[in-house]
Amino acid sequence: MGAACDSGGDCDNTLQCLRNVCIPRCDRASQCGDGFACRADGLCIEARGEAGNSCDSETACRAGLACKLDPSDADQDGLLQATCSEDRHGHAVGAECSSDSQCRNGTCALGRCVDLCGIDRDCPPTTTCTRIPRVEADGAAFRGCLPERGLISWEIPVAAPTADVLVPVPAHALSLSLAMTVDDDSQLVGASYLTSPPRDSNVSRVLFSRSADYYANPIRHRAGHGVSMLQIPSSSAARIEGGAYHLTLSSLRPNGEIGSATPRLKATVRVMPANATGSLPLHFHFVDFTDYPCSKTAFPGAGTLNAEIARREDFFQLYITDLREVLAGANVALAPPTYDDLPSKNARDNIAPEHVRALASKGIYSSGINVFFVRSLSPAGSRAIGPTPGPVGIKGTAASGIIISLEPLCYRTWKDVARITAHQLARYMGLFPNIDSAGRLDPIEDSDVTSDNLMFFSDQGGTALTPGQRAILSSSPAQQ
Image 1 (tube, rainbow, N blue to C red):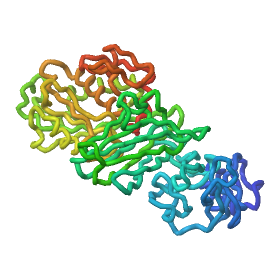
Image 2: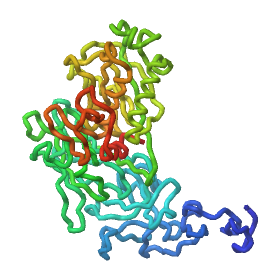
Image 3: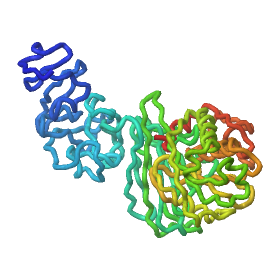
Image 4: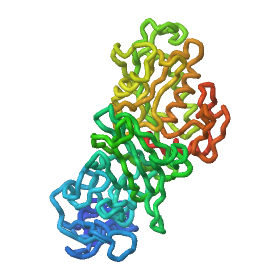
């Protein structure tokens, strides 16, 4: 390797001759340099596309040119056409962007600069060539390079208190999370209408309508004060689809009229190769447990609980082990947790619902799920509070975490608290009670109605989950 050469015959069979030097064969075009494609046999081949020529990949255009999208699908093959054009002086592929003009290659999608591609070899390492809807072309698709695993988050501009927007979802997405927020907590924010991407018949399906019964919608969603969430999938009736979803969202006054605040909308998709697994980051937060009434039995050997004690003491680490075992049944693996103490002013007993929102807003992590341990909740008997589903990719909202009361430790065990925590985490990740106290069922086809299920509404429930429930959790955008 590195020897001078005039042709491939001058190099070892595992090498190639490029620019008169023997170098390793390629796996991706980026290893060849600008203006080259990587062939299946690992040879770098110089592109022939000149300015003005049609192209279907960045690798089809000569060095100094970019394959840029045309405005429409002129040949009606279902994909936007593209043309070799002069490079812009802009960001490289993968950089954050809010408009095409910011990207060297002239294509900004899902908040990042995207290279056009035909196959995975056209894309940089750790990315994949996938079908992407283009908002500027009313959802018509193109093939571009996106990360093959992880979370992709971006802001979708909203211009007025009520607005219609397109939400582009790439073909390899496992799930979609939409976080809607307004600065004025006295106003609500949420979706009014959501339809699926058009199918072969060019007909979209209504997934949510605010005018319909909450339990009749394929996707359950409620507006919330300051923040609300919508997640796909969260039911058997609305599976994730690649394409452009049509969303109407609004700020609302308490009487249901359109509000004055302009919503913000953040979209997050989780992408993952087939058969790959992710992990769920948990971020533990502790109020002051000094002089806690049940401290001797609740915190054996320590007498209190804080971030440092939780990190080192067996009773809390065994709680995490129990939590791991419950979630393992849902194909959810826990990432190493973080531990943080909260200011002592948050250490009140019997935290009322109106104070829960302020506590949740102290969630300082935008990844995974913030878990707050408190002394007790009001009304009496409350074990945990949290949203269904919870926000992904944003922090500091009134729904940015789950609240776990440790009052049950006065008469029960940490293993019981682990089950309560797992139930609340699953709700944050998109599951509803398999059956609620009024006898209403969840929207998953194979859910049972027994108390053995993790999602049974009582804290005396079990830890079992059905395949349909596990599928929702394993695809949750709360995972990394």
